[in-house]
Length: 313
Length: 279
Figure 1 (cartoon, chains in turn red, brown):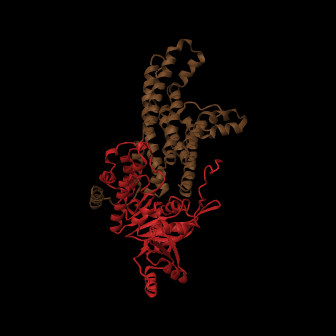
Figure 2: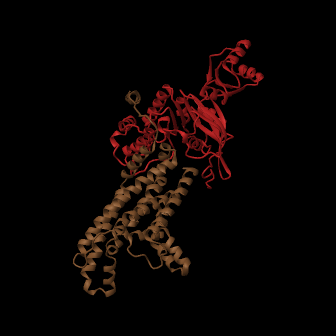
Figure 3: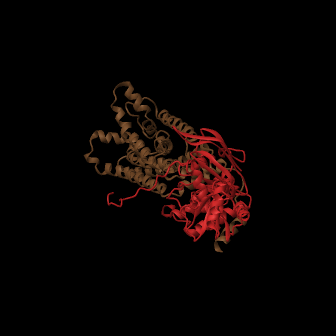
């Protein structure tokens, strides 16, 4: 279990992490989300003892990382930035890490096999692609068979097969009761991987809840309705203060601000015929965009139109 | 599904060992790190070849040109034959040791390796100590081996002019070659750890060795003598010399002690900053 308590990290005048508190529980995958510059990587570095907090603490099963006696058997970490010497072979990189904790040499070959790098184990990592580097980082994280995994953008640079592999691996590890804390900016990946979400923006906690609850809370409920009596339904919904919009689908309406049962009951009360009544599931991406719209570090302006219709740039 | 099999099997057969990351394990791990990069081999090969080659070349040229040599030069050789053998090789070889010492620490920062290192050994001072011991011992062993090899090569080359024998009075000059190189290596390692930048640290230490150490001789008076004597590399170098430079204020062993003290103080500062700074 990872506990972050009132954690603050300042760099000069900027506050990268601002009184952050949360806990990452074992046995599930906790996704760590936030826009660029929100402080995700910094928070992970603070948990891992690489950076010193300005105040507050980050504890691993009650201990600061720096006090762990055999850290690699406790915590496996993959950092976003490259953390290998390009002149050293993949095998020797892992061998060094293994020797610091007395992890047997055969475990090095085992994790190389696991991530699919056995064939290039003796090659210097300088020539590795982004995806291979990522696999080596995952191998390093798994080396000590840790109870806790902290992974910063693990699927970055992986091909679709690799993405699927990481997803299955994380689920299998969480299923064994391990603590998995994983950051990603790929919302669709998070939606199918994570059980729980911690969302930060500008270094502050925005949300800490299960994925389902997050989607429900931060997106408008929308219901697709098909009816031959569109105008009557539109009027009835308007009386209740619900919004009705047309869709591209012929004759279908989207009702927001209400739920499917409420719409069904309204239609029954007014004697309106419904052909379809389907709640629309908002995606994690939509919920996330809704939440971070105001808190993002980099507010996106609409893309400029290059070259107007009148030909002037 | 193939991917699924590869996920499942290793989890079932894991054996990640036991026990904590103690000092002995860190020593072994740092040794693995040093021996698994090519810069170590290139630097050490440069050191060995340069030192041994010059241990032969300078005596050889002396022998060949003996008749043209001035009486002063001839007298110099009789006074300090060991210095003639080891001096020029040491002058070149020390650069290889300095560069390698810097690489051992500073390249961890340039490559990002330091993050892996500190995740594995978050007790940072212990890691720095392990690294320092492994590297210093490596240079000490190689330094002593080439010192005595070079000495015997030079002695054979000089045979027709002068016979040089090791005795309790001059063995320190040969043994001092390894001692000087080992301390210089540790000094460079510490500079690399302080500056965390390969090019900057190499520039700094080469400037100290080749420029600053000599330039401060030009400062007149007692201050100049003090600065010259207590400049770390000048102070350390006299452990290899028969005669002390004219403006040198202390003995050979005291000089070496000054070099060691400089290194120790900077090591403590590097350890303190390593713990304080973000990696």
